Length: 447
Image (cartoon, rainbow, N blue to C red; front, side, top):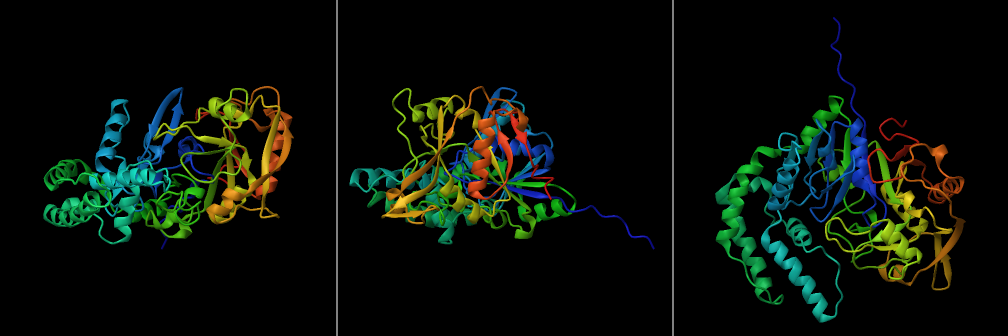
């Protein structure tokens, strides 16, 4: 008796930022989805921001996976993501206004914790208190992400699935609101929030969210077994990871590749290739140590060049990003944490026209030389970068799609970076549009 043929399982790629976020992951994910049938967000919330430029048109996404801009691609929001339902529906509506079909392709894990108005109030009140007390701001986006994750870990969170049960939702909401109102009206010296408006609004949005609820982990397993290629899209960057970043100047979730499994509800055996994204230089938004940071205010300086040519402002907050030279010692730490299979270097074109390019290859710390980023934020702040210099290049790299077309010095720079950090360069991004890409090793086709 002849056995029926079954589809071969698909190949899956995890995309993670290897710096402090803002590395250009959205563009890379969008480009890779030409070879994927599903894209998954597995951590963070709408504090992340991915900007895509497609045929010259810019689209900013915060919560919805970047694959939504490709027709026919399924998009999943995994259980590791905290969801503000009002923001999610607003983002859906903005995409629908430009002709993108969303609701039939977006699958929301019913295990996602909900971000509620009191989370936002607590987040902002805490940051204001830090500033007035002299404790120093963390640099939060003020969107309630941290307090929502706190409730998750404390096992008291409202989840998306609670919206299916109004009485249960109301009971849990009352308890949670009382808890946060105690903090708001006490030490935080902020206004307490009322139950009824929050509950009524939640019930209003529930009707739109419930049709998108799904058992995301099982759907991903089934799609993989049927032969679908899946792309796991990280938010923020490795050095903002709650465990492995420059704590406490970090986000509230695990941004590293290993969390793609836990944050989506699949096994680690489904993570076949890890693509690490890094700029050809380094940026950071918000507070925290930054060894290679350069002054940006004075025209004619390298820092000003990186900031202005690179258009370095946060997608979510609009805050100017701090800029500095590429830090290979930092990247070395990221390669280890993520198990990076290959690198994508973005914004190479921003370095066009610089006479000299420097790369941090280690640090001086307390009279000794080290070659990897320390784990302690205070030690990182005390690090003095050790640089290796390269000659810049004439001509433009913008929009190039072939390695051999890059200026000789640009190729030498990239080859030296590759040698320092111990991971092969798979792709180089030479501009914001999805077509401005050099491919050396395709992540979905690499052996």
